Amino acid sequence: MVTFVILHYKSIKDTLSCIQSIQLLTEEHSIIVVDNHSNIPEDIMKIKATGVDFIELKENIGFAQGNNIGCEVAIRKYKPDFLCVINSDTIINQSDFISKIYKIHDATKFHVLGPKILPEDLDSSNPFPVYKDLEVVKNKIQYTKRVIRIYENYFLYCIFKIYSWSKHVFRKKDKLKNGDKRVYDVGLHGCALIFSKTYYEKYGKDIFYPGTFLYHEEEFLYYRCVKDSLIFIYDPEIEIIHNEGKSLHKTIKNDRQRSLFRNQEILKSLKKLEKIMEEDAEI
Image (cartoon, rainbow, N blue to C red; front, side):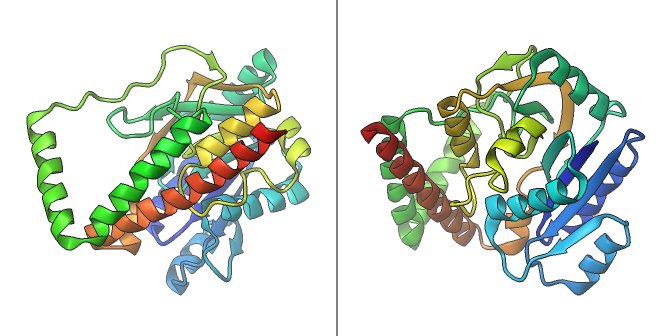
């Protein structure tokens, strides 16, 4: 059995579409939806009406901890062969999605698997670029601090927006592309991750590093996989559609405040990653 874990936060249309796409699969599966304190009763009723297992949190505890709770319940209730943790703004578009997971695992014995992510013009392709060493993380921390100072000052923010707009107009952005073959030991995007039983039996309830709220969970997972010599792969044989970024847009309407919040959370995550890397370097 494969258990799908979906973290829901306010974007009800996305979540219902995600659930429906999974329920069309004919192979054995279960679905657990974790509501990260959306506090919208009518939306909760709609999710419950789909017949999935439903967990309602009393506070918003972020991506990693919210998904960890869903995974903990999945493991206790179903003891699945695989945990498929996917964003609520994703769609399963392959009827044999589950059988492909088993096929890939038979060939690789993976601990963590990342799929091909569509469409290929968003910032969510696999393999996913991650910060792999301490010096890069430190540089990114300093850069993020500068960006936060810009967004905190409305005048600087306006200048920055004009500059960003001009770059967008006059420079053609290359579309991001997924790899066309199976690749080992690469960063995997957090919108869709498949964990084997061997993985969750090793880490228990902490499927994700629990110390982050949002952003850079991919770095923590990559660092864990490398440190513990796990098998983690990208395989384009399985696919998922990702319509990214909906929840944050619904939560914070103002562009400057949304960008400020995003970078503040990025900074918190990077500082925790820096601390872990520094502690391990001292051992």
